[in-house]
Image 1 (cartoon, rainbow, N blue to C red):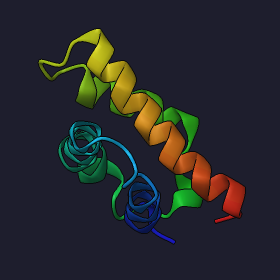
Image 2: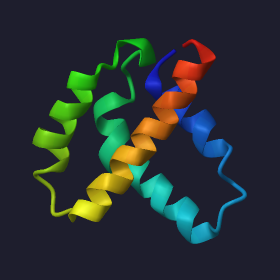
Image 3: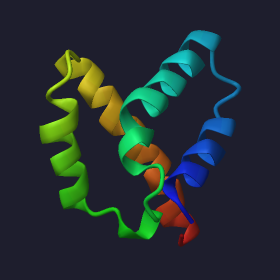
Image 4: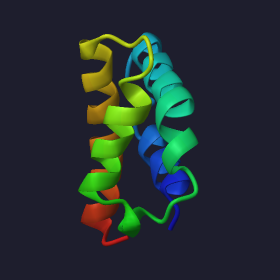
Length: 87
């Protein structure tokens, strides 16, 4: 399964959250996570892939450290769903 599918399934489980939190999650997915990982099979995303994504992609944005941490956490949580599912 591609990461996009897992991320969208994960996001669908977050509809109980405040609209502002949902908006933040959607924005982080669309702007920072999916452009890199959307079409990657979830089982092939490595720790090194994520480290490179942070050091090259995310670090070169105007995001503050807190936003980078939130984006990484979102990636980790949505990717963790796939790991628990065995995808």
